[in-house]
Length: 251
Image 1 (tube, rainbow, N blue to C red):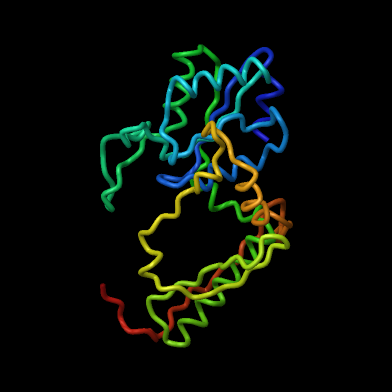
Image 2 (cartoon, rainbow, N blue to C red):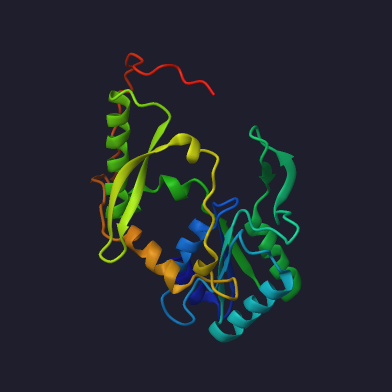
């Protein structure tokens, strides 16, 4: 939708749009942005992954090429975009309560580089919490899997299982089939699954067909919530406490 907006004004105004998405070390959400464009020249024209070292000269050349060919350039950039030495583009110089480097916003940082190097007028946006709050746009597959892992979590708790986590297992790619299994939490917590290199194009700025094949089943189907007075009607939970059934967890 933002790409359509930029395309409508690029002849006389904005040439570049930068969307910052979550992903400190892994570019899965940035890669999902690549599903928006299916043909040659369709946006996003650049995806900047944390797994690929940021090269300012190469990025600027790609932006300039896109503007010349398409009239505009749309970029999806992961918040964790970093240089070859591991330094974040948007390192704010502080750390949070978990010891993670606090990031100051890669979208305005990148947009500023583009203005400085190429002189293009730009807009940028940070999706931030909207990425996980927009239930009204969740796919049917996503909703079904969310309910399934929730049910499995309750089942595990009632069975007295501790330190276990429901996990989605892909059984078949085509047709897409899956089930829910339980996995030891110690094998999942604080572990990161990075984008496979064959999911990222040779240029480092796009997704491959293998990545598209992997991600596409996850966005299939529509499952809109009920609406009331033009707004999504969200369930109001009672949040009633229950007696503790599992032993207190200790590390």
